[in-house]
Image (cartoon, rainbow, N blue to C red):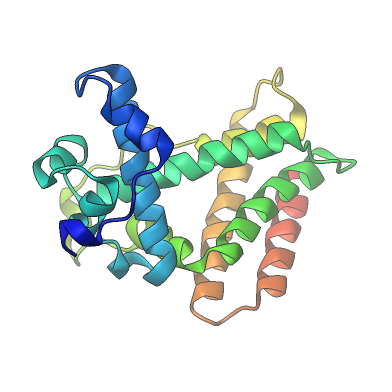
Length: 213
């Protein structure tokens, strides 16, 4: 893609370009453009469609600038996943799950996240590829699992289930992470054509009901 092929800049993009390139506003706007470009490209063709040069061209940043923000495509896509998680959190805050029980409300959060994957299968493919693909065979023996788990997803579900003031117990976190793992498996099976979307959602909701009930 040449510079002449790049998408036109929006009003917000033009305003950002008038800011100092070193300002916090400019950095934030540049980051959002790169994340937006990654999500758009993923939507067109999954993980392989997200090419660094294409992202940089769409975001109107130099390739060197891209690598200052994100050392690799993986890091960019992980940032895109976090961006989508923030949107899920905002959606849950705006439309509180109305289930009668904590497990029903948590199940609704996991189901909404799955619905978002169904609406954008290209991004689902990219997100699951970068987060769940196994490392090269044998490499796991040389790696130490991180001390902490990324609780973003389960924290959103926990807040919907019990309320922001609830102190989540170790047992509840374990159950939520088990539901998260099943959510991942169901989403991958749906992407691979082994489950229909309806069957995947049914399993996700049932897992929340049984594990958290």
